[in-house]
Image 1 (spheres, protein in one colour):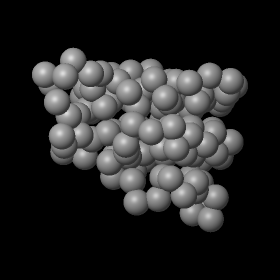
Image 2 (cartoon, protein in one colour):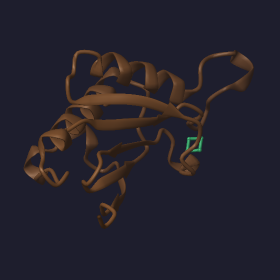
Image 3 (spheres, helix red, strand yellow):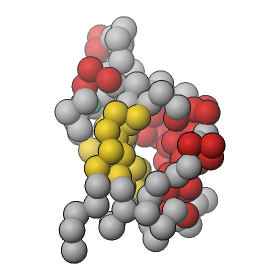
Length: 122
Ligand code: FES
């Protein structure tokens, strides 16, 4: 089953300079996550503008129908963080419930979990 990574593309970390004309931190992270997920069969990505976690930029969610879903934040727009996010999402996709044993978590997602959302009743 496909796991979706939703990346907030309007997230701005402290120090982001609007005057520079640079992409937002969220846009930069989104591009890196999209590149990291490009060859995955089980992980897809999409962008949204604001997931209401602005103080914890950069924010993403990991979701699949009928599974436990997660919000994560305080990522940096780096290839290392993007790869950890995609690696975790692939494990979420492979999990029947969406729960990934802690021992399998990529190091780069540890400390980034914000909330867990139980699947909706059928
Ligand atoms: S701007 Fe990213 S959560 Fe609000």
